Length: 320
Image 1 (cartoon, rainbow, N blue to C red):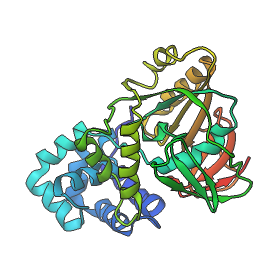
Image 2: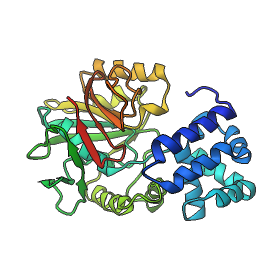
Image 3: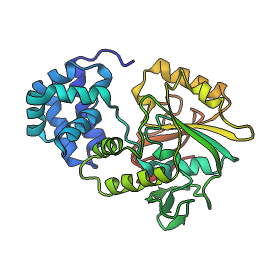
Image 4: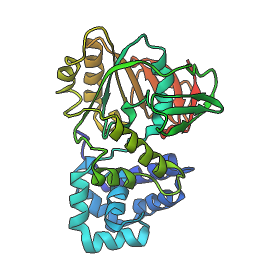
């Protein structure tokens, strides 16, 4: 797991979140993270938690879950002073599981040209919303692509560069997810948690979440409880013959240490899978961009850098 952090490194992590992640997306969370980075009371509270439970997204989502609205510096401080046990309980039980359906618009160009039919395994699948890549509808700046469900949301993505936008969605013959804490799109409490992970100021995400969850209820996907190393091979063994196995993930490997990332990469290759990762720069270390990135890195096979993209799927710049 992640190693021990000092209060200083917690502070640095929140400062980094404010300037590199929230900036330009959520002014409210940028300011809240800057506040946390300097506030001793909050830093001391975070320091008492396990290192993997100190993440800004987790703290802010848990606070919103309890408060019923996004926290601000005053309400977060009061919450820690008056209801810290309740906040600890939520943060201990829950995980950061953004499960933004719009990320499918980033994954689609990488998936659509793989010979099918495909067998999809998503690691860190949460409620399975990004396993429904063939059901959603897409709009790449006027290039409209219809999915298998006309009532599914339209995922709008700004393409830059020679993005290989397909003419049709890929054929998927089998799909499953793997997650330490699977979520159920038919469970209102789980959908509420996903809604709490949406940042204030990001228009359209709440409506898209509700539409994607409704799509998932119409097309249920099996999400298995398990670890990305311990249980992946057993799940891959369930794939029917004659399908091309694709293992993929978005914003997952950042939450495990370097040794586990390397072991995961070796495992996907040993399974004969096509591996698609969509992670922050440096997480998949053998596919570093030639210049500083503005977003996530879409990588095939751990080494082939395909594109950079908005972490929540609003734009993609093709580099391959």
